[in-house]
Image 1: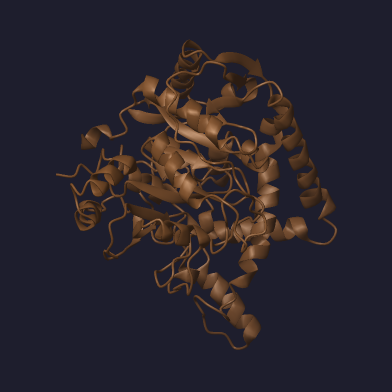
Image 2 (image 1 turned 180 degrees about the vertical axis):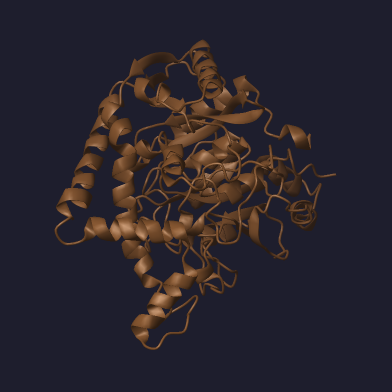
Length: 463
């Protein structure tokens, strides 16, 4: 019998290669599970083959399969081509289980902004799975998929992975193609893997990473190494004071992260304090100027004239206004208005231009830290999963969920979440951040810590 809650993708591949199970049996083990978490927006029929099943966040274009970005404005949209990452998955034989729920246009930290209703956390269905990629995180944690792809703009892979007890990687900007992915903020968006362990995460990253002629931001990447290290000898780990002592970090989260840092030291790492004061102080404010500004430009394409929803209007202008009124939720509208204001004549230099200068400062501050350390560590999320509805009416409180993930995203750096313990019976995430193209370093450190921590990734209520 296939244990969908515990089976890793690597183990599944071994079973398939040894013909101990068939591709159809493996696909059915996940597809026939009840999605009481609302992790999926669309579930696919078995496409056939002998590959490992995978779930894709519903911002990733899939030919002939609905791609809604969690929005009513794209409810009827069927792409005519695959995103590059989806095509890469197909080329490696991966079989699409379905498209996972997301905050609308990936704008949110709880999946509550989805036009089709929130997903639920497998550890406690009364709580959020994080966002925007809560559907992918819930699917992996809840045994609905062995692994998944998400997208991360300001923390949308790392944060839900932390809240659901998964491993999640936001890769270095430019290592994974964005072609065919519904755009939110083009200078920040990056697709990455969500998995049960670090080796699966590294394996899936190796499938999707690399240069793509359709995305001129992409580059050749170092060969991905599946980690085997059991220690951290020779590793220099920095502990940024501001990211580990920030206001709002729950005591239980701090305690679990502190134990993980002590464990890293016992595994041979050289641990020292460092500082990222401006990155933490200004990161969120900088992000919420740059990202909405880019969103206001990207979402201008949704006008009812080309694809997706079209509402009636007396003329073209009225039709566009009606379409956007009917098709877009409150959060996209809020960010479009913020971004349009920041880009408007007379305010560009004061807001967007200044935010870009702050972004450069954040990059330089991180670069200075990485002259002394191989990676830095902090909590991924200041809190464990919170109750559905708890922060839905307070946008600022929701934005601060990404306080610790945003700075490295603004700098274009890779970040890995691994579960490091429990607080209030819910997972706590440890964030490992490295310099550009340091994914292999993150995998090595994450794997060694993962082995030593021995965290049980199966939610307690499902064991």
